[in-house]
Length: 254
Image 1 (cartoon, one colour):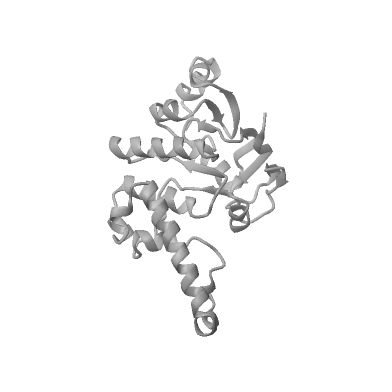
Image 2: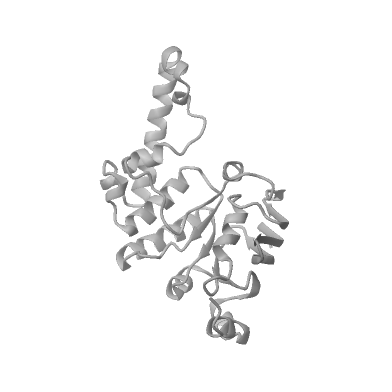
């Protein structure tokens, strides 16, 4: 089994609240793994810790054989581990195309003297970034909206834009936080198709989702969290029969 992500006994506390409480999970390379659990189980907090937005209070996180729990979000993203957010964070006053073109780092045009002394290099790099951005927009079927302001997109279109912006960073693994929330059935189908295509191209996905139909459409393996730690894992058919899982969902946890 080729493990790409290993979370070992990770903890994250907020005062007396143990949002993540000694959680250990693994994700294999080129898989689509689901992460489910009741509200308050610690799923999004775990994603925030994995991607460096929260510093863990204990434990270790390894990605591609390298320890990453001491790195910041930008450093982790550069290691090809990226994520989307439950609430899209589009740059509202910029176009869809501009949202994507801002993603690549170390652009020559970011240094004002390059625009004076190396204008050819700046123009060539900008053309290349634009070409890549348009290819990504073609892939997620948003190319017809490339000149639309991001604030004018529907919720589902913003979720596709989130995925597109993530793809501009050339990730090996993508963490999706509730990709189906607020998405209509037509765009949901498109999102599922895109994820399966990307998986076939070598990408790995770790997905938080409350929509069990989406989980069954996407994930061959599902991890259940409850009270800040892993509770069960297996296929969806296996975990939905697990008495511990049934108790976690029906036992009144909030």
